[in-house]
Image 1 (cartoon, rainbow over the protein chains, first blue to last red):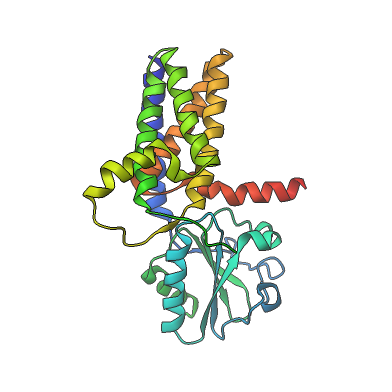
Image 2 (cartoon, chains in turn cyan, brown; image 1 turned 90 degrees about the vertical axis):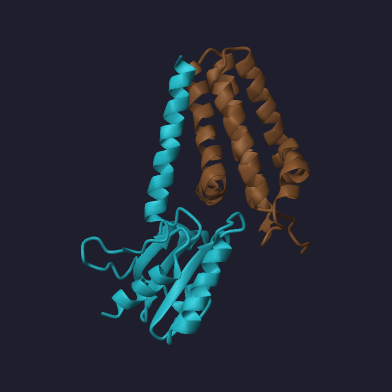
Length: 143
Length: 145
């Protein structure tokens, strides 16, 4: 009897996780909840990324070896960077940048950050973003 | 650097479905069948984690029975994420067994249910919870070091 209840509970939990994931994966959120941007914490410069920032925006993807959806994410980001002027895509190996991972509280791979021209983190999403979600995040940013 | 081995991504999904079935059965049947099924699933996880994902009986079933009926894969996937996930699964099954064998049924059910949720999510949505834990484990390892 207990086993049956546990089984039903596990099935409900699975359905809930799947629903939450479908809703939030790839969605870009604003990173400053208070409206104030904390410049010290949420700014990443070119030196730490090891690459130059984009003129308008930079898409930073955190990847790891144990991450199947990272490849699909990389394809989307590169397509968007090719299609939109002044946008650069950078792929970061999370394991090789654990300090940055901790500082930015990256919990999952892939996580995508959108930086403005000065390197401030404006948006972030975890999971694979769709091309239209990525483009919309960039469009919102330039308003 | 040697090229990492690749797997047909549908293989781990089929394996996850079979894993879910075994774990769901383990949760509902009475002892000692419960412990027997957990040992069985633990052994499969151990082969996947320490030998290779392709060596597990579930992968053999996929190659022999399922794949001949499917179109060729559109792309292959790195074998390391599913292999790491097998290790995570093994840890949960060992904890579940330890719980049941020492009379801590709540621990046994909790760990078995967690493993079932992870396997079922993988089977149904293709989302690999064990793989996501890799980065978390590296962060923990670094902060403990």
